[in-house]
Length: 235
Image (cartoon, rainbow, N blue to C red):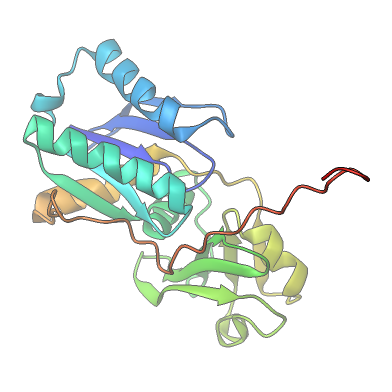
């Protein structure tokens, strides 16, 4: 049994999964603080299933790309549980988890040469994305990309490309192509980590609990707060 954690976007969720199913899923209301909600969700999962952390096979976390703050919180909690319980730590690329999530929703494209492009909103017209074929093979590695009318031109010239995730709406505004299919009802979930984390467990692909860091993809840029506008005559 694996504890799966998802905090890469505004969604905060945790799930207990085994090889065949999602045993229990807990999700916080979107927009709530991950820092205050994640440990509550995990405690509820363990309490309601009478499972001790030390009896888990591993803890898996969505490692990024995604929200800097969300990833930092999720990875920190996952590392703490893995270290305290003496169990392996598994890091799953968020875009890979998204691919498995779309498939689990029963939205596998019927076209054999179709491509799947999970994408996460970054800032302005930039998205984090990767491209998979229908068998889960990586066609194009994870990258941060500024979207314009020429984005994915080679992929779209070859066949249908299904775009989904928090960056899909942004992409739909720029890309006008008959082969572009946009899915707007996709939301991340810890349950999507089930298959890739089980595969990692079988292959013993574990992270170093002490040194593992989120996959930020690009450096965090802190913005300076705008100065308060003083009232007229105020010193």
